[in-house]
Length: 301
Image 1 (spheres, rainbow, N blue to C red):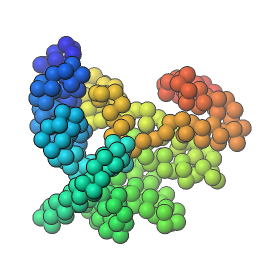
Image 2: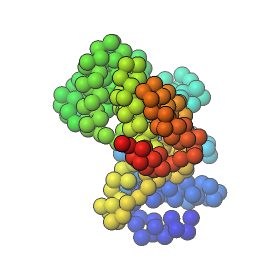
Image 3: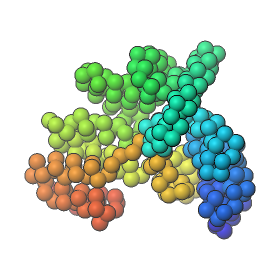
Image 4: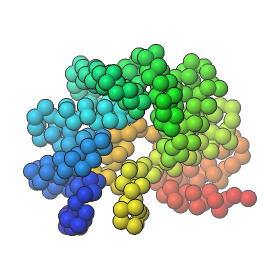
């Protein structure tokens, strides 16, 4: 707490520090101070969904106002990938039809904004919500428009690819997924999807993709991880968000143990017993991701 308060004092413009200090005040039983810092983080970086989620969680815990609904709406509007998270699944169960109406409200507001401002980013986000709601046709139309207008948007390529895979168009699936990986090699969703595709017939490719998915998942990053060296001249840790595990809860869940088992089985199928053993050790928490990568490198011929 003391260190964070000093950090915020000397770098009050850093919304991530403000956000983390807010959660420390929550844990310390000081809700008024927590509220100040959560709101300051949202003010400093209004387009960061994570901060609105935290403010929404905080309001829900204390029963403030609409118990977080407006903040959750803002977060989903900014980052509809949240809909794939454990948090969103739990929220949908708890709020039922209110959650469905919330998504309809978001879709309607985004559609209005698109009519006013032809924005490919908003089209991509709206497409994801429509896809979540099962409207594949409208979602694909928006994804295609978004990637035509702004080809460096990685997520619409990914979602188009997953739809193509469901439609058995594997060639287009591979094209779109590889485009998404090229645009953002740090994302774990893309190699995870490719690993699932390759695991039947191309075991080496599946192992490679699953390894990358594990590495990226172990190093979940935020914008702060990228900008900290520019702001302060030092690197920060991945997953540097409080409370611990918050990024995992608000992103697509990947079962580390299941992926390790798949890699181990694939390795055994091609005679790589040592690699299989290493991934099982990583699954059981006997190795860190850094130790695993070091051991894999040592074992190379």
